[in-house]
Image 1 (cartoon, rainbow, N blue to C red):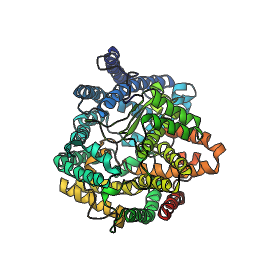
Image 2: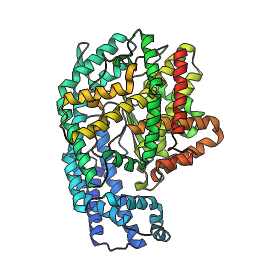
Image 3: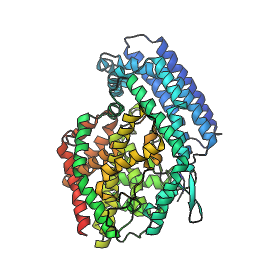
Image 4: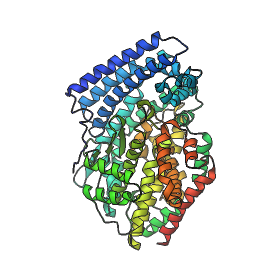
Length: 582
């Protein structure tokens, strides 16, 4: 089986003639869009609206194909200078298109009666939701020239600072066991069965951060101040309001979610203290033991064994989910193993144009690594549901992006538990609760941290020492007595890439949303197994054109009702009770 993904469906390399052909086509499409928007008259007719949408669609397909290819290359080799230079080239084309793109948005947003135009244009009909969103976004847009300037400056501003963080965290290393080890390699050792390795890796991880934290602090301050400035210019009350608008989520839903989480934090702290007790600690769990395996957790998987296990697990739930997984393993969609220069963590990237996806992971053979594959392949299943939409209708917002992935994890956990002995159940419950603790407690601490950074950085430059203390304060509020206060991790703000996007703030609460929404959905599946999957696929398919609350309504759920989130948390509490009993 392949160890690395194959990107040939995009381009065979930077010397592929198709690559330069598409760069030229994207440049021409950008010019065509500028020409159209400068000469178009309002109000739009059905014919001109269709012409505009098709030109925007053509540009979007080309620029996405190029940018995705380069991003995928860079994610597994952050020292790929040629790809980085080409990415900068593509971003220049995109920044030069920003004024025309803004003009398209304004022209579409200015359509008074889109339904009337849709009656005589199938293209307009397909893009009705996009047009309606453009109308909603109209009040938050800058002038065309300002949009172009903001886009151009981001390439060497916020985005460049984000690239710096990615480069530093993927290349920093320190001595470990007599040889250099990268930050990603050290963090992967957090789940080692050997307690001395876990502690040593934690200490080595902490030793990495002072080498890069000052530079990363500059990145964080500048990114967040850019976001604040542009959010204000666009008329948002705060970056959080802007994130909620982009997420198509009502503030009532976020408040219901967060208040429910706050109420249930003591139960997760109880889990951590019970784990600490099992491992021989009396003052809460040290940070370096958060991912320590318990029970009979020594089983390891090759990539072939991981494939077979997942296919067996998911075939009874949904043959379609299993088919996506088979495609991913058999057709080189996955880049599996950690290596120097490769980014940490894992992600999925949909390629709707080709009805495929690509998945990056840092596979280490553990059950947790299999769980990560199930998670990312849940994203790929979500990709499959939206791939028949028109190209500009395939993007879904942050919160629901974590739903299909977490649903897969819930099913995998239940499948494994059903076959397990008591000792294996302890290991599996613990693995499940580790993930839930990350999605609830750690995400809550990250939400508090990002909120605090936005509140403070407009009036104060937050030095590395300030950010270290702020991170610790947020961890104390989230984890409480569950953690041993002598062994925490002040450097978590350095290594988490989600803080370093100039265009995507608060990529934390979507994980909590996705986790608890998926738990609630799985409860529905158990209650209504015969009718669930078709409704579930419909909900996923409609995510690019629905609000979060509309997604819930498809499944008969009111997401603004705190009671829904409490029910999901009660199911996690039951697992904590079972873990403590075992």
